[in-house]
Amino acid sequence: MNKDDRIDEIKPVDFSGGVGFDFEQYELLASIMRTVKGKAILTINNHTDMQKVFGEFRTEKVKIKYTVGGNNKAKEAQEMIVMNW
Image 1: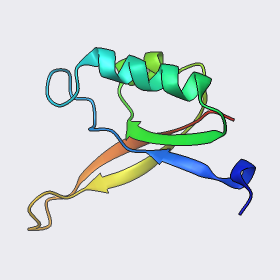
Image 2 (image 1 turned 90 degrees about the vertical axis):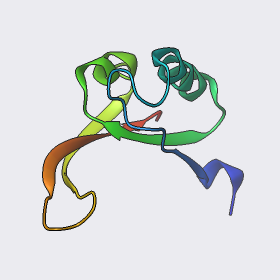
Image 3 (image 1 turned 30 degrees about the horizontal axis):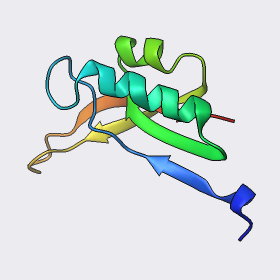
Image 4 (image 1 turned 180 degrees about the vertical axis):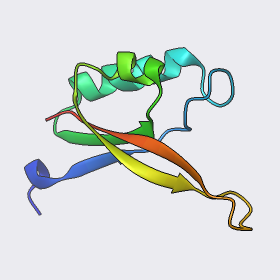
């Protein structure tokens, strides 16, 4: 595999407005995606704050179902796929 064909995947903790990463850590990830040599792809929950942080990049939104703990308690949501190419 040629190093130019490689894609690095980034999957941080989903943004929830207080739990998980500090907001600055998401901004740091955007900075890394901006300056990294090569391709990077990141997936994050589709939150308005995350749209602002990663808005300069190509994005696609996909519908997903979160299931936590089973029992058919799936919650519909949207995930944002962010690409730096």
